[in-house]
Length: 148
Image (cartoon, rainbow, N blue to C red; front, side, top):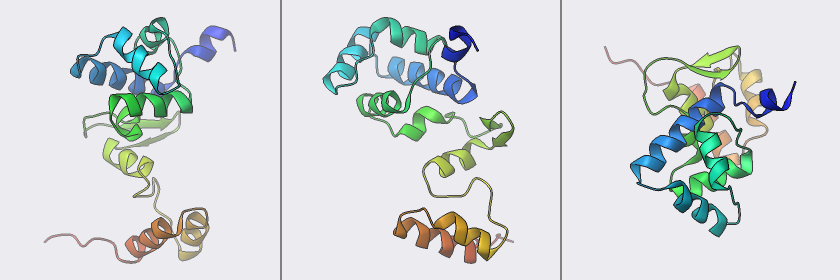
């Protein structure tokens, strides 16, 4: 893999680039202003780097993702997942979900793929903070009823 391929974002990075641009423009922030805000929070990205992110020519690491969310005043999930609820979202090259399902999964309020047994659920919640694990078990044991 050459440097160009390594720098080019994948499907999630492409969504992130589009969301950074949409939110930055919606807030009427210039690249210079956004770069200054990032420097203020201790995670500088130069103007050229911001332009390359929005042109899908530069990846964003986890630290930069959180810094961008802080200065744009949005949750990280709002940078990672498309704003529209329709269509399909490519989580990985082989895993897709609806944008709503992916948003809930990234937010930690839903499984991307529902566990098929109590044993599988037990394995999945083992690594969660206790309140979220308890909520996941409760939701799994009592799925919402369909309105008839």
